[in-house]
Length: 329
Image 1 (cartoon, rainbow, N blue to C red):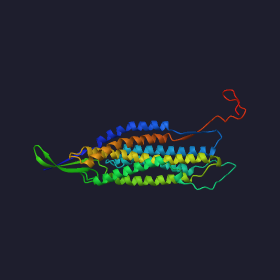
Image 2: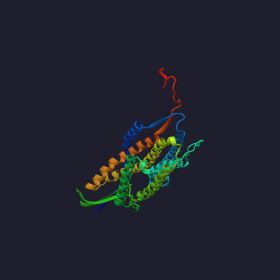
Image 3: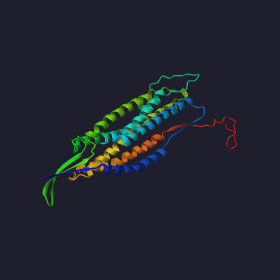
């Protein structure tokens, strides 16, 4: 005898996402504690300050546009595609908005033109600007996402309507008290197989192209005045770091829900789990809230990106009275 049981695993995913909230709060606290602010004088390094404000403004615009599109995909995506393929693209839309804002800001940034003009002969290299830690986090997160999507495509099965890669199905023989030896089958969905992996893969390739364009724009941005080269290099490192964070937020924001679907489908199967299935289920159950929470925390850090603060008080001159009454020398 053969019995086929079709169950839905989407509800359990909400629990994984709720577990992500504490990790997001931790990320926000870390971003606040590690926030970097560089203070310059009122009339110091005006070109670098103008570039920093310009690029930050465009990045915030891109972030807001990305948030709007992501929310629309989350809220209205199921009305267009009830199976959730558009909704799954919400993190990619958020990251793409940030990257487009970064590209626009870097390409249009120009230092104020003064009476004195200067130029230097130099060869700017991207490798000198890339934060190794953030690049490693992005690489690790991308490798995990690719592995989960590849696993989903390999283990995916057609659902009850024949849509390839949208369910996880198993058949096994069990001994039931009343029926004896019975062939039992079960199918869990939605499953992140080829049905979801293909559009997600295309979206992530587009995101990778935007990352390359953003990094090239940061490197190619014109230099401000000579005395601001040190600060300008710091600003470029910040911009490169923000590009990597935007990409990481997208990858982790996609990895979390995908891992949640994997854990839900594998944990509720009617057939006994193999050792590999159990290991994947437990690993995905851990990755789902951690990845989603890390994405939320890094997004908060991106909003609190390192900034330049201009000191409104002019620098004291020699002979001026100091706050404690002693002349400044």
